[in-house]
Length: 73
Image 1 (cartoon, rainbow, N blue to C red):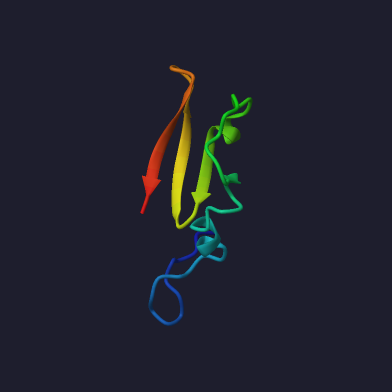
Image 2: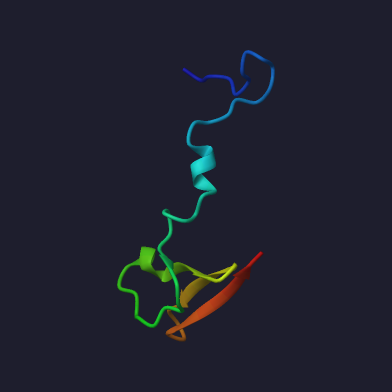
């Protein structure tokens, strides 16, 4: 049976746990310094690094075998 996405109040239904999706810390490994290891699993190829007040995402480039940094704002 297909259910409607409309709630009884007329707005779009909020899915339980959706806010947890946006909380990346805990979902993705978080470190305090730049990663220096070679990841063995796909899940280990994405890392958050928190230093001071800034957060960066590091993605492992399997072709060039190096970590790539993305600054998050």
